[in-house]
Length: 548
Image (cartoon, rainbow, N blue to C red; front, side, top):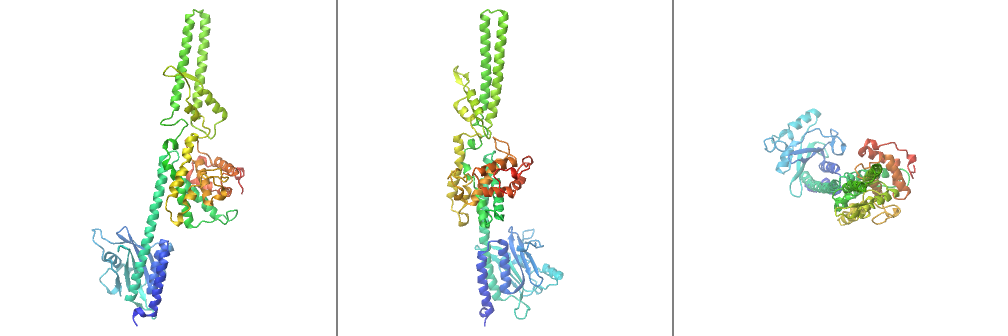
């Protein structure tokens, strides 16, 4: 009976097939490498082995080491680092390193089968002998097989030590049948490693591209810089807290590793539509900003108005002189005219300061302030053509009367349209099955639980839990952001008070809000991204709508 007909070999062939199937399904790199080495040891009954990978095309890096006799397990999922430096494939002068069996097999792309390392002079086994002297071990038979990818490039080396006879327990050379089996396994393993490397490479490229888009959006606007990076951090904090919940409405909520990654991708892309938003709108720091801040023209207009008032006074004084009034009456009239001019100038200065303040925008402009803007706008001055004109143009009046922030209704519609662009962009992509919900998650952060949000007016019941998380993360980041042009950064207590009112008004998910407060997600985020002066004491009992 030949080696290839031996029943034990047939079992090993079956085991080789099962290992090959397992290799193709494994996604964790460390477990994959372990599976390759342990599988090779199993089908050859080898006592020990090492798996190397090509590192920077110039070294063989120790990835996994195992030895049954020495009870040695290093690298891989053990968490135990291998205390050996990588093996150089080339010497400093550029010459190939053919002295060690592993580097020789790599550089020559060929299997090396050695019956007894102590009896060969073809390779340098001095390191092996030192290891044996230190441990009392006896390294004898070696089987070193390069692992080649689909382009016949060596991507790793599988080295087995000391084949054990299953009957006698003696150390024996690796048979040709065993060599053939391990070469087959090495080929399957190389395919699995290559596939995993390709998947990892594509994933890294995909994530880098996503971050590139987010960075481009953040760089585009100095006033929202960092938003696209901070929202994912906060979203994932809240997601993990919801997963960890042991009680409450979300105690059964869970996301697996792929679903968490799907949410992470969505949070990075939630504002990708802003790449099309005009900078003049997205970066509008004041109400009158266009190509420049038009408040400067209005300030010049106030100076002109005061100058024209002074000219009017001087004309009146000249008229009094021509009428030959008595000196007593003239002095009194002059004093009255000067007092009126001084009062007018003072009022101009007050109105100028008021418009300056109004121009910066606020959380809410009162009806009285809006009326004052209109009253100032109705004043008249003489323009360059000698005609009377309203002090404020219709457009200036419209912009200065903005109730919240610095954007008009039309400009806010342009800003809001970024979510429509985001939807269009994200829904046009050919997602793998594991990322199909990215558009849903990313495009729901402006929806409200009562259906009054945009762009689709979804209600809470129509939205998934991850999509609702995005809304809370987006709002809280905006409230605490220190780089918005129309408001100062809010403290934790101020931000949570506003967020609480939004829960009461059915704008955000109530269950997620309670977890956000109870697990102090806000504080974890604050310690990473907020200024020290923003991190004040928070009394949970004072937060509107919070249910412990």
